[in-house]
Image (cartoon, rainbow, N blue to C red; front, side, top):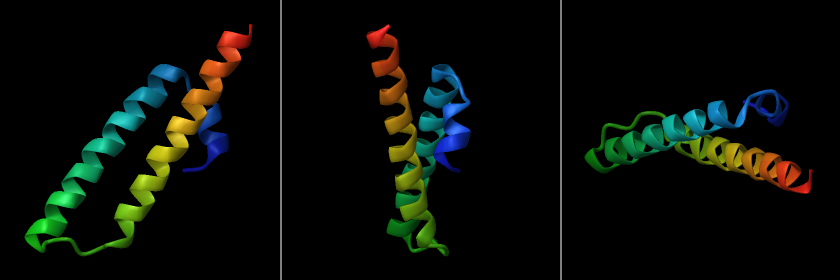
Length: 67
């Protein structure tokens, strides 16, 4: 997922994406705690994707406030 794809989405779609990323991050943490996590790099990727979504949401909010 890159910022260009995220900029094309609506704020509602971004919120849904953020919610699904948070659920995935929770599940990955649970798997890590139980020793079932195979792809540890996925945790980092999910955290960064969530941060990217939050950044785009904040940019869209700032643009809306400026208008």
